[in-house]
Length: 386
Image (cartoon, rainbow, N blue to C red):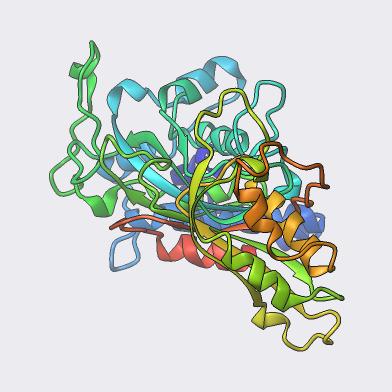
């Protein structure tokens, strides 16, 4: 249910007069309908909280209703009334923000936007942004992703940057220079409301319309020229696997040989558009997964952890393919040195590409980002993730 389109003030007045739905009516609802109703009520409480005075009285003044209208447009029935209820983006300034997102990769056809499918991470995220009317279209929001993950690959901390509408007339960070023919239409909120505390928090609203396999964890104001791709200082991935019969020490020996700046063309998918195959690996190791410490020795989980400034297409999965051969005794750790020497090995050998499902983008490193998430959104997010 898109709670952004619900007339909350009318609902509050009606509920206060009627005393809410009867027990008889509630008894007729299915479990799914009851869950939906609870989620709607939670969303209403979150969005009405700014309009409630310390005494607990809902602000039904013109100022309070105007603020709610700006936050939650109220469409009526039918296409004509829905168009009337949509946000007029000409009235709002734009600001640039970063969103930290987590997702389960098996539910999507990769992270990047694609022409042949909408079922990608960024495709679903943009659908949610349009539903809650934070962006008008994908073409105008200047969306940039920190990392592009393959189909099946998950993420705990991918970051995207984009322009969204702002309730403020002049935000401290990230306001897009205000130009264009519609500059005279911009709304000017009262000075008491023109503060960062009254800015839209996109985390809660987005998480209520996005697929459960995709969550927004936090948002941060950034400068107008901020790019999540180029501002990222480092990316860390974890590839999980059971110990089984792998020789962990031999795999660790091979990992050390990846560290440093190397030409990784023999560990990536060839692309005629790729001009530079050099990448700098800062850390690379095989580590036990602590939260699986109670498993038997044979089933003990390990993670291949690799941290670098950037990666090539399929690079990490190809790296683990070679490590798996080393762990099984089919190759020596020195095979890594041979493959990194493109003069000695000018052509990539044929070996099976490791599956993408155990791979997780675990960290994306940025300098001085002020990540924010309201207490209500954080509580809802915690319950959902658990």
